[in-house]
Amino acid sequence: MAKRNMSPVKVEMPSQDPLVRARNFKEVASGYTEEMAREEALRCLQCKHRPCMDGCPVNVKIPEFIQLINEGDYIAANQKILETNVLPAVCGRVCPQESQCEELCVRGVKHEPVAIGRLERFVADYYREHSEPKPHGYEKNGRKVAVVGSGPAGLSCAGDLTRMGYEVTIFESLPEGGGVLVYGIPEFRLPNDIVKNEINQLKLDGVKLETNTIVGRSITIDELFDEYGYEAVFVGSGAGLPVFLGIPGENSVGVYSANEYLTRSNLMRAYDDRYDTPIRHSKRVAVVGGGNVAMDSARTALRIGAEKVYIVYRRSFDEMPARIEEVHHAQEEGVIFNNLTNPTAILHDEQGEVVGMTCIRMELGEPDASGRRRPIPVEGSEFTLEVDTVVIAVGTNPNPLIKSTTEGLDVTSWGGIIADEHGATSREGIFAGGDAVTGAATVISAAGAGKVAAAAIDKYLKEKQS
Image 1 (tube, rainbow, N blue to C red):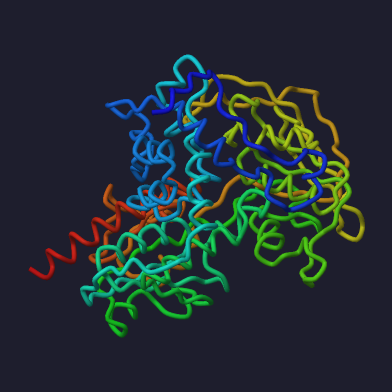
Image 2: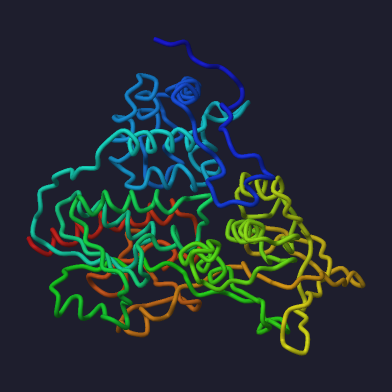
């Protein structure tokens, strides 16, 4: 048995030089080697009470897969993860482990926690590189379930239902599967091939993917029940409706929602000269917001040629919702942070083209309903930021299409589908989860919601049959 590694810090993961990667779309980090993975795995204390698992929305058996790394059985380690998580290569890259599983790691009490996310990525990548994809051979029960949306919630729900024996069809509005994983997260953080590989495994296991199908337009949920014979429907359609600031000048030429900006770059390959997809190649870009989407937008702007990129965020670094790692990477690459700053208007010339953005400095007051300190304008602190492009990344809401075409489906005032803790909605047989219910959140929380809903759908259909 190898000796436990009591190093206080994680094994560092190799990555591109910041000044080099800021001008390409290759993945920032190259991942652990076998030696690095074994060294990091030996930092795990194999706690009997497994606190790390309490922080995982999909209940990955973390100590067990790490022990299999210690034993050198990386294929089995990946299979152990797959028992509860159908997206290990994705989650290993984009999950906020620092606020979930790693936050509860015993090693993290005094030092750095075990690098659970990096180890998950390692075994998923090892499996992909050293194994031939093959179906798991799940026995089918002949019953049909429809899934709306192929983002993390939909994929997770479909994967679990397929394992239970159901015939599952995913309906996706875009020409490629993956939802936010392919249109919202840049290649340098999550390569599209990684997502395609995870989806291909689900297809091998029997999941059908119908792209270019807008539920609510191409087909309604009622038609899925009445004409196509589906016995239950899971709505995991995400939150793709952009939120804007409501300030003067937002209709100027050169103002994007982050959704549009990232979709043009990520899904439509606007960054690649071989594709004729228009995107604004700017010199000075302001990205408004402080979440992961804002970081992705700012870092994308650098990579398509911007000379200066600013993050404009009304609170401080401490309140910023983006992952610490993403903020750190953006800083390394040269993104300029204007924190405690709020936009007041977008300026444009006679042709309607963006030429600047007026802003005001902020200070933090008492906490608001979210628990974060409320930003308050500082009188007389107005200034103008000279930019030619503005990207608004302050959040998204669910698209109202599902609600408007489905009778009896209750929603919140902001458009989120109302569902209970098991994903059940006000309509019998319709379940929902992920961003369509909560508004924009994390990939892993959406995957967890899909997993919970799959169990509830299985229970519902079995009770209906008996």
